[in-house]
Image 1 (cartoon, rainbow, N blue to C red):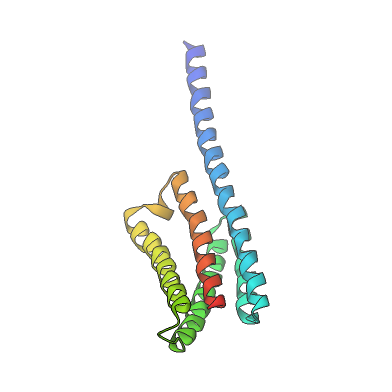
Image 2: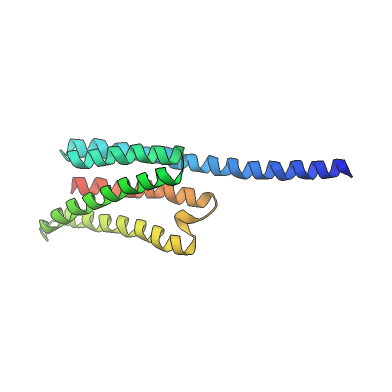
Length: 163
């Protein structure tokens, strides 16, 4: 009887550890996917957007910090740098949007893609937060959506710079 109880306890501990290992395995995806922001830094430097490049450098560092050591404090720091990149990106985008010629189809297509990337990220965060879906899903799918957030937002900001 005692042997059976010990085996059951060992199985429960093993299952708990495996779940934690799964979470770590999938959270590492976010750690590596935030390195896509290095591309934003280089492209911003190439197009002489030094403030944008600096903000993305800070975002890159805070994202690495948060995804390697997720605490409440590192989360707040990461959110602050995310907010600064989004606000500056919106500022640059609106200024460029005011100067677009209606007949310039390339710039109009870029603008539509930029707005779609922004709305996708907002939808995944706001709706996902209230419904525990997308980025806030408790299993590995949440980490995969978070990885997509890194990639899609990077693409949107690259298009803002190129626009």
